[in-house]
Length: 318
Image 1 (tube, rainbow, N blue to C red):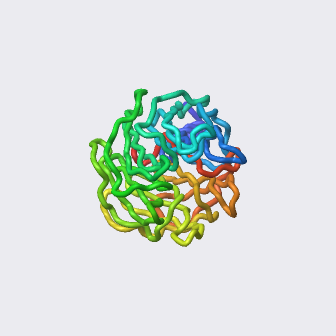
Image 2: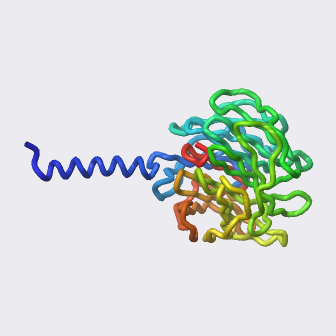
Image 3: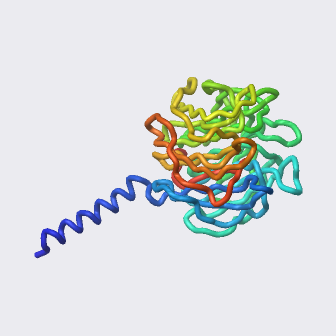
């Protein structure tokens, strides 16, 4: 007959396993590309449910800043961005297997070479919207994440926009903020499983560009950016993705940044990198998505980066 202490030890093991499941203990966030002192091909990763510094994951196929990133539970996708050889953007799409480490492989191409775009996804489809091609664009492309191949036209944003942000639920893709001819507060949405143009959702609490976004299955968060006066902000807004309406104040980032990135698990949102006082930073912060409040320090990226992109294997679109 097992001793009481032996039974208690088993209970503790089961509790630890359950806690790992409930807290998405194996969920990974990836941060890739951007600028350090030069355009970067770096990919790093963190375990979202813990805190700590990022670890090297591998490299993109080509160094780039201002890409978009999205993911399934298996694959992380990095697309577009400015390369040393393509000032107005590349069409290259890379992919990695999130649960492992290693260098990215070529996936295919966007319909349009561009930088400073935004991306979101469901478990099967990745969407890439807006960006800059030499002029702003309103193009939305999509891919089937589980296969490789070139992107297909999905539809159009309501306006030609660069430096915007995007997140998703399992049903809807959200695009917010950015610059048209001015900094905007616009939020629009699409139904990921279909194709078509985006539709008005509401507005951010304040217009801003160069912001970052992440989501649970129900809430979308938008953090950082610069407003129409060019002032950097630490504002975090949130929306309820299943409804339409204007964003509400969530709290503040500790760092006042633009050109940052974000990824999430089902419960926790991470904001990493960006520009502060004209220089790239390595700060990662986190929030609990279903509550409100200010962000807390998580750790550091492997290098200081801005204009980077992030994705995860457990976000709100999965």
